[in-house]
Length: 221
Image (cartoon, rainbow, N blue to C red; front, side, top):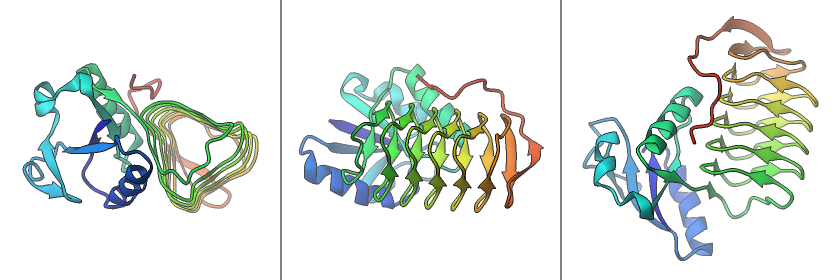
């Protein structure tokens, strides 16, 4: 499978790729797309930065799959994948082979790093990312285009809607719902439902403002 990554920023990608290549000899990285013009023509982790959206018409799209590595903003993650999909790009998952996905439902376009624990009955939508050391408890749902940073602890039967961004070390008690396109600050403890488009910080977590996001969902496909 020929892969192009979206976003040339985090060298951890190279370690995940090495682990995947060791178990899948058909996995071939062609390079990165990044809309920062300064990066075009350079290399990142040994692979070329091909350009931004402008080079999509030049690519052999039927024989390429994309993986979105953007994690700085769930909104940008969604909008980037949506634009590539609209231009004919198709996506695949990049998941560290150490992650046990038995009895787990996983969509398309997800990026999951090593040492992530995903318990039975979890459902993960499309275009989401989970970073190292995060625990996702049983029967939790993670929507589309969400990002869970490293070291997060999500209890069972939690619903994380589309486009949610969670900082490092967030803790969530069981059976709560995090509304779409909310931002949960690092170290926040969630003990109750969070309305959509909220910015939440603290222990216990409190809504400090409401975001203005022009999207009703986060599924780019």
